[in-house]
Length: 412
Ligand code: HAM
Image 1: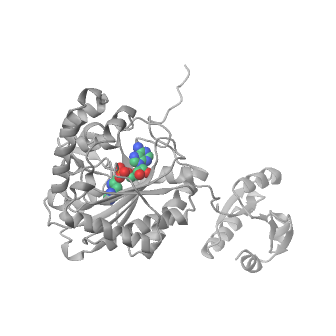
Image 2: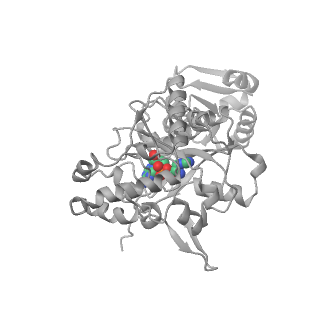
Image 3: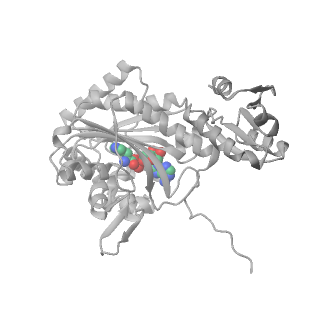
C-alpha cells in the first residue's frame, strides 16, 4: 500500500533553510529598531479566553465572526488562538496590574491565526511583529509610532511602499457618523453589493473600504467622516500631520481607511504596496484609547501597529548574510575524539563549527560548500602524526598546515 505523503494544513507555511534566515533577519531588524526607540520585549500566551478577543475586536468584525480558531479545552473553557496581539497584551497588563509601569512600550513577534481564504500573501497561520506604546495620548507619540514603522521598512530597504492615514475620531464621533452613513446608504440599499447590504446592518463603517465598483460609486457622494470629528479629534489629527511633515514622512490621507478591527479611535494608518496583489497592507495599526476600559481596566490611551512577517519577507529584495561555518572533517575513525575536542575548542572561541566524518574528501567538500562553509579543516593520519591540522580556504582553495593555536588565530 502506498503511504500518502503528509501535507501541511491549508493556509500554513513551512519556513525553512534560507527562508528561516530571512525570517530571522526581518524579526531582528524590527527588534533592533524597537530597541533604539526604548521598547521591551513581551512573550505572551498564544491562546486566551475567547472573551478577550470577542468583545474587543468587534462582535461584527470579520475576524471575530468568521476567522477565529476557537475550541473548548478539556475543562470546558472556550479558548481562541490569538488572531492578533493587541487584545492579549491589554489583557496581560490588566491581569498583572501594571498601571504604575506606564508609559510602556512593548515589542513582540510570533504566530497569529485567522481562518481566512488563503491566497498570495494571505495565510491562516502567519507571523507578526507587533509594537504597542501604552499610556500616552499625544500626536507626538502617534508620529513616533509611524516613524518607527517607517524605520523598520527603511532598514529592510523595501521599495514602493506608501503610507496611508486617516482619523476615525473618538467613539462619539464615530457613532454620529455611522448614523449619517446608514441614512445615506439606505437610499441605495438595493444597488449595494451583497456584502455591503449585510454590513449596513452589522458594521456600516466597513462598507467604506469595499472594493466593489458599484459600492465605490455610491460612496463617492457619501457623507465624509472628517466632517463628524470632534474638535479635539480634528486638532489631534492636524497636529499629527504637522509632526509627520516635520519628520519629512510622506503620507496620503485616505478617508476610506477604517481598519478591520473595531477598537480603533482617532489615528489609523497602513503602509501599503501594490507588489503583493490584493494583499496590500504590510504594516498597519492605530490608536485604541477605548480598549482598556472595554476590557475592564483603568482608562488608558494607547497606540500600536503590526507588520506581517511573511509579507515583509516577500517584499525583501536584498541578500541575507547566511552563516559561514567552519567544517571540521575527520578523515579517519581513529581521530573522532581529537575531532570532537578540537570542535569544542573552536566553539569556545565563538567560531561556528560543524563536524563531519568521512574518507571521501570530494563528497565532504561538496557538503561543506552546501553548508556555506568558508573553511574546511582536515584531521587525518598525516595531520595528527605531526600534531597539526590542515586548513583549506574554500574561496581561494589555498591549503596550509598549522598548529591548533595558529588555526584559532587564523579563523578569528
Ligand atoms: P491587522 O491589520 O489585522 O492589524 O494586521 C497587521 C498586518 O498583519 C497586516 O498589515 C498584514 O501585513 C498582516 N496580515 C494580516 N492578515 C494576514 C494574513 N492572513 N496573512 C498574512 N499576513 C497578514 C492587527 O493585527 C492589529 N493588532 C495591529 C495593531 C497593533 N493595532 C494596534 N496595535
